[in-house]
Each structure stands twice: as structure tokens, then as C-alpha cells.
Image (tube, rainbow, N blue to C red; front, side, top):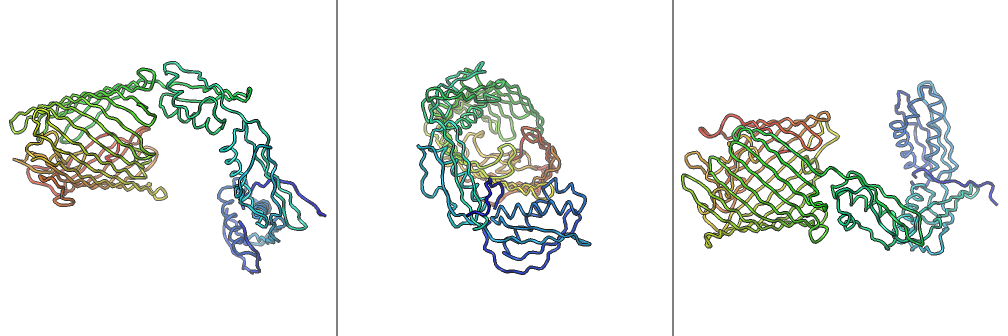
Length: 586
């Protein structure tokens, strides 16, 4: 016969232990300027757990910090210790305290550990559970953490395998103090089995409803699962056409549950402008216009212009998302560009298309076709080129933020065959490989981020002089090796760059943050372009170093860098270079 029983719900977190005799001397420690000691005989692991619990409570429990009198503080903290012992299965535990002159002494008697005697279920008639779903077994310690984990596993299984309109799982524990045991009953409330009914939308103004409907991961008539509704809301938000999405789930009607998604559209048009400065390239300004929903199905039209002292460009692109399949997009583009550098002067018009596909969560592939018509002047000679290329790219990206990465890494490779349609004998292949990695230390002062980048490239199948000057590799300047004149690291004729068939670049940065908006950077860049097809990794690299300031905005950091050439060449390099731009260097 039960002497007494208690019906309750476990709410703590718990750890199995087997008691044995262990005399532990009192251990003093300080918290809230009050010294404590614990006098405990029993399991050493449980003793260490109690110490950790007191430390945790003193750090996080606001109510505990409010007590200024030692007796009230000790009384409340002894209740916390008792609750922790219950959560570990010690339901006969006693915690007493005594105020000493310079400390509070806790005397802890955990008593026996209570164990599970029997496990049962109350389920609707159509619910069957597999063996091994519930891990806690008869004879195990009655630990709240284990019971809560099994309740979560039960809820997840029901949600994944049954079409219940409402999933309501619970448990009941009967504790018998005479035998130090307990009976656990897991309960699944009865609920009708239903399917998704009609799916509608409200709030649409310019978006084609069929486009959103095609993106939904749920369809009318399939098994009803509430977690699929959350997935549907996330999918709709990820179209970047909506600012908010909520779901109105109606009661079942003849076994069907109607769903209405209430949406609010974003403003689909954006005007943008920017300004930059580099010592050797001068000031540059840019402006752009974007429409992210041209025909009601998230088609994005972009028109951008860029004007600098050595380059002017007008670019346009039309992106068709979910082209033929949900993880694929098609971009059509047309560009006009004029460049006037120490290496060459060119005018180029480009037409092309690029198909991109998200192969896995982090891996993305690109396949394109591009025709570029250019007139290039080099060393006083003018040549016309009509190049057809078929670029193929792969990018594996694990960065946390492409514009301001603090953790992760990215590696990208591109192979680009070229054919000159005006000179059928001229063809070559341009290949590049680049990788960056980022490691942050948020626990350190100024939250430093170490960033490293390496890149190399090669042009094969052709002599250098036959490659259009605007297609060759160049290094040096704000986009590669800071501190050196733009495009100057490589073969030179009369101190003017000729470009190369290969290149190598290395960069390292230590990025620091202070406050919400400001940060700094220390950097080291190295690079060189070579006449030969194969890059000579690490050989003949010229290095530049510098300091920078970052102002962090809501979209990207604005960077101010000053760099000096460590391998300064007389008559070629200046004492320093200054750069202003948007976004991290890499």
C-alpha cells in the first residue's frame, strides 16, 4: 500500500548517479559578496553538479540577487538546491542551512535515488509507436531531462507520421515514496486526422498568385502537418517579395483544413548610389535602379552605371527566378564598358546569359554563354575582337554573411573557354581559383576576426601577345594588392603594365570591432602576374601592408584603407595609397 503518492509534472533538468559514501570537506566560495560552504556526503558527481547549479543560479537568477539579508538568501538558495536534487531523481532530499559568522553552511542529504518502475501510454486508437522511441526504461533514475527528451521525441514522431489536426502530448508521473519508485504515463490527446483543404491568399497587389502558389511546399489534399505551414511561410518570405506572412488555419470541415496566407508586399523598386576613391584610380560614382517584380513573378530587372576616371560602364540584367525548376535561375545581361588604363584602352559591348543552380545547400553551379565585341588599343595599335566564351563555375560557400563574413569559408573555381569568331584559329582557356576563410574570437577584446584569401589563375593554349589586353591577368590596386599602382604588379614595358598569362594573390587581415558601428583592420597583401601560363606560387610576390577603418552600416561596412608598398620600386610606386569603398576587401 502506498503511504502517500504525489501526482506531478516534471519541470527540471536532471543526471543519473549511484550514491556511495564519500566525506567531502566543506568548500568555500564567494557569490554576491557572501561566502558559502557545502557539507555533503554522497556521490561526488552529484556534489559537483550542486556546485555548478549554485554558480549558475547566482549568475542568472534575478530574484536571488535581490536578497540583501543572508537568511532570506540562504532559504531561497536551499530551495533551488532541493529542486535540482528532485530533478536528478532524489525526491527525499533535504537541504538545510545554518548561518555562521562569515558564511552560510549548507548541509545536504540527498537520500536514495528514485527509479522508474513502469512506463505506460494513453494513445488514440489509430496511433502506434515503434520500439525504441521512448528511451527511458524501467530501473532508470527518474531524471526530468530524460522524461522531457522522450516527450519531445514522441511529439516529433506523431507530427512526422500522422495527420492530426492538433498534436497535444503530455505525461503524468506517480511517485511512490515508500518504494522510492515512480510510474510514468505518456499521453497523446485525441484529435481528428485531416488533410490540407483549399489554400488561399489575401493582401496581394502586384504579385501573381500562381507564382507564390507554385513555391509552396504544401498542396491541397495532402496530409495535414502544422510544421509544413511554418515551412510554407518561410518559403514565401524567401522570395524577397513579401515583408510579412501569417497563416489563418480554419477548423476542419469534412476532414479538410482550409489555409489562408495573409501577406504584405515589399516595395519592389529601389534606387541606389555610391561613391568611392582610390589614389591611382581617382574618384568613382555609381548609380542604379532595380525592379524586383517586373511581370508579377519576381523577375528582377537591374540597370547600373559606373563612372570613374579610368573606367565607365553601363550594365543591365534581367533575372528569371525558378527557371524551369525551383532551385534554378536564368540571367540575361547586356553591358557597355570603356576602360582607359596604363596597360590599354578598350571599348567593349557584351551580350550573354547565365544559368545558375543551387546544387546543395552550400554548393552553387553556373553555366553561361557570352559574346563580347571589343576594340582594344595597346602600344598605339588598335585591334578588334569578337570573343565567344562559355564560362563554367562552381562555388562552395559556408560564410555567415557574404558582405561582412566573420565565420566560415568559401572556394570558387571558373573555367572559361574563348573563341575569336573573327579569327577561327584563335582560342584559349582562362581558369581561376580563389578561396577565403574567416575565424572570429568573440570572447576576446575587440572581437577580432582573422581573414585570409588566396587566388591564382592561368590562361592556356595561346601566346600572351595574342590574348586581348583587356582579358589578360593584372594585379595591384585596391581590388588585389593594396599599396601598389593599379595593374602594375607583373610584366612591364617602360614602366607600363603588359599583363600576364597567370597570377598569384595572397591577403591576410585582422579585423577588429569596437562599439556598434566602428572597427579597424590591419592587412598584408601580396601578388604578381607572370608571363608564363603556370603561376609561380609564392615566387616574386610583392607585398603591401596597411591599416584601415570600418564604419558598419545595416547592409555593408564602408572601408577606409591606407597602404604602403613593402617592396617599393623607384619610379613606379608611390609612398602610399588611399582607398575608400563599400564592403570588406574580401
